[in-house]
Structure formats: C-alpha cells, structure tokens
Image (cartoon, rainbow, N blue to C red; front, side):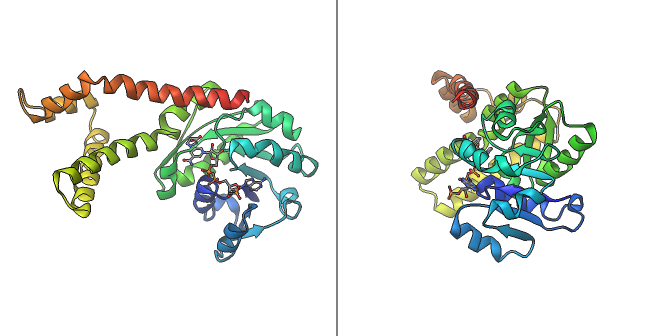
Length: 267
Ligand SMILES: NC(=O)C1=CN([C@@H]2O[C@H](COP(=O)(O)OP(=O)(O)OC[C@H]3O[C@@H](n4cnc5c(N)ncnc54)[C@H](OP(=O)(O)O)[C@@H]3O)[C@@H](O)[C@H]2O)C=CC1
Ligand SMILES: O=C(O)[C@@H]1CCC=N1
C-alpha cells in the first residue's frame, strides 16, 4: 500500500513519522508532499520518506492520501488535486471542521475518513477520533485504523458531530492542559523557584496525577477529595477556583472550540 501525506507541518509530519515504519506500508516508503521549500529540504535528509515537490509525481500512485493542510488551504489544494485523483483512493482528513461531503464534492471522490488527531501523537501518545463515508469498506477502515494507531490510540465515533466534539475535548485539549501548566509555572516562579525547579515541580505533578487517575477507577473529584484535607491548603485553592467559576469557564472553552469546528465546516 502506498501512503501519501500532503502538508507535513505539525500534524502531517507527526503522522508521517508514526506511519513510516508501519508494516501496512509493505516496506514501501511513505510519500510526502508539501509546498514549503524549507520543510522539503529538511525532509529530504530523512531516509524513511520519499519527498515530492510536485503533486503529479506522487498523488496518482497513492492508495491512501492524508490531508494535513490548514482548513483554509483545503479548497485550493483540492482544486489542484481533482484532475489527478480516482475513485479507488482513500482520503484521510486531519483537518478541523472540513466535512466529509465538502471533501467528496471538492475532489469528486467517495472514500473519505475524517479524523480529529491531537498533538501528543508526536510522542506516540495521541488520541484520534475518526468516522467514515459509507463507501469505505470494513477492511479499508481497519487498514486506516492501523495507520492511525501508529501515533497512539484511536476511537471510532458515530458521526461528524462527534468529530467536532472531539475537537473541543482532545484535538484542542492539549492546549488547555498547557494553559493550566503555564499558570502553575508562573505561580511557582513568582514564589521564587528557579525555572528548572518550577518545571520539575509542575511536570511531575501532572504526570503523577494522570498516573493515579489512569490506574484507578476513581473520578477526578474523588482524587481531589483525597488531596484536600478539611480546612487545609488544597481546600483553600479549590474554593478560590470555585469562587472564580473556573470549572464553568473550562467547560465554556471546550464548547467554544466545538462551536468553532462547526463554523469552520460552514465557511
Ligand atoms: N496542530 C494541532 O495540534 C492539530 C491540528 N489539526 C489539523 O491539522 C491540520 C494541519 O495543522 P498543522 O499541522 O498545525 O499546520 P501546519 O501549518 O503546521 O502544517 C500545514 C503544512 O501544509 C503546507 N501546505 C499548505 N498548503 C499546501 C498545499 N496546497 N500543498 C501542500 N502543502 C501545503 C504548509 O506549508 P506553508 O507553511 O508553506 O503554508 C505546512 O507545511 C489542520 O487542518 C488542523 O486543523 C488537528 C488536530 C490537532
Ligand atoms: O486549533 C485548531 O484549529 C487545530 C484543531 C485542533 C487543534 N488544533
């Protein structure tokens, strides 16, 4: 099977690195096409990829094509691709918002898998949700799932609405976690810790909390209660967050991302 990734930025390159060694490729090199000259030069130094400057040299050969450009570049890209694609090829979109129907119409093809990946895929700890057009067979879906799983875990969702919802939770989610981390780092530095000590304190606290959560059946609320002693320091912090409505604000932020994904599909 020949796999082509178009757009090798943050996400496209992450997927390319994950998939490059997959047995699904039957030792055929993963193909990459991007417009950035700088990126092409960097990618050419990597022996695991076949890098193409011209779409016509790689697109007709591909069985599976990953679309990794920004949503606002999708239409221009599809216009260029249209004369070179065929009905047997499978198109896997990594793009937020862009609907399956939009891709089917733009390329005049039928087989589309729409996904929502996330950035921890870079370290093999991503989570990708996906859904497919009805023309994708079970075998084809399994094959795509195997490719997606090279970057972490994947979940099949029942429709595109849940892809937009995943965007609000897991797609954009790493940024919410980094936001929280940044705030804690700044608090630590303000208290007088060095940059390095702040990083150790914050990152180890995140890692430890995630391990506790993942390795038990307890909810985060129960874990919060285990940290907080009555009348103690944690309760003071949690009360401060409650008074400032932090929980509601985080939920609103996740819905803002979901709503923006819906809007992107309508633009
Ligand atoms: N970053 C993330 O955490 C996540 C991103 N996504 C989705 O992934 C997609 C890519 O995002 P991201 O990787 O961050 O974006 P990047 O800008 O990092 O990567 C996109 C790449 O595509 C190139 N490109 C643009 N137009 C074309 C074209 N016509 N042909 C070939 N290459 C082209 C860009 O080149 P140039 O820079 O020269 O324009 C760039 O190198 C988006 O649609 C986004 O919604 C989804 C989930 C998470
Ligand atoms: O911010 C974005 O639009 C993309 C989609 C999810 C994460 N990054």
